[in-house]
Length: 429
Image (cartoon, rainbow, N blue to C red; front, side):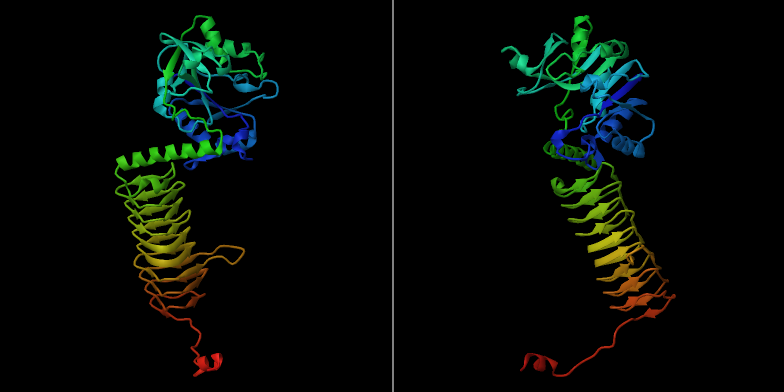
């Protein structure tokens, strides 16, 4: 499709009450601006993001994750407003889709409807039961005739339920003429993009209303809006996954990052949180467990387990209150109450209750390597760097700070001391 996309992301977003740029606040794991970019990339190879407030920070975030995105710095001092944001942009294609960076819920399907047809301007509109507080879109037969701000509405116009959703698809030749002609002769002294609708109507051009869902075109302007958008996005993610075969118990209690991938038959119990770019394959995640930026394959974890970033868990059982961080476990059992960090553990090995890999000395992290068919007894500390070869038994309560060779039994315990009659002496009996 011969289409260029402009995403307006220059605003300060003061209602967010945050030092973080509004468009970088996250919805289901991704900055809301990224959701708009993802939708745009399904339609166009020419995407321009308009920046002003904290422009360098936003541009860096984008370039860390995307390539071939163009940037345009708005001169918001001389040319404030949505119309001012468009001044000076060079468009590659003959049709321009104008999006807002604070609309994370927009879908490709709705954008396709907005760019279809041959109208001079396609304008997104929403039919609202209560349109109070919004500018009304006056439609005559099938075309837009006027946008009237509520304070300027006549009594009969206040009854209109159609409002502007803020997204437009415009022919390039119109923008090339209209944007330089915009005026800031208004109460706010801003250049309004909506003025191009009046220009088009005055020229007898076709401005076609495209009715869209309010949910998708919801702008996020506050922390309350952000929370509401999160609820909607989570519902979409979980519905799609359940239709694809993922079992969820009490799905309303589950959180799933928009970047997570599920394959095969997976079960998520209540309270589960899947964060980051996680990949879950044929696995069962039990109540109130967390998975962060990790891979689980043919495994079960929890309840109340935590898999921290850069872990790979294959054919493994992770029980309750077990934490795994940046480790590779293949065919392992770790039933309860253990910390496994910066470790590689091979098949057939068993990690007892209370086992800790002591991987940090206050300055650096070190590796623990455990071979096949190793039995690590309860309450053992493995002081890294350390290598435990295959078929080793480590007795409960041991502190292991040296490598253990294949087939050995390792015991590290202080001698047991017993003092007869001490209880009576201590309590004076």
